[in-house]
Image (cartoon, rainbow, N blue to C red; front, side, top):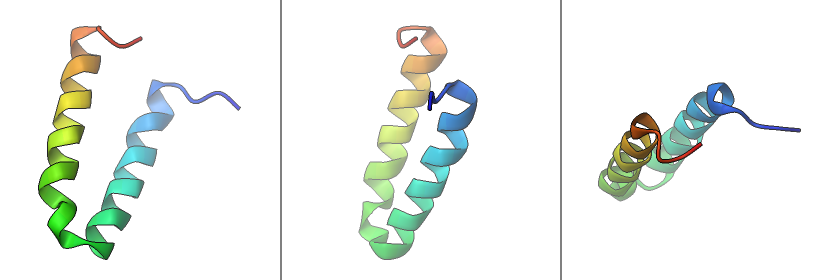
Length: 47
């Protein structure tokens, strides 16, 4: 099974949502990591 860019977004959002429900203190870290990954992907540095 290959995971493309279209499947990574919703899957990452689902995992992040579950982690935030389990440990709300992780919210800052999850948002920061999400923004870094989104920025790197948007710049085309990650293929």
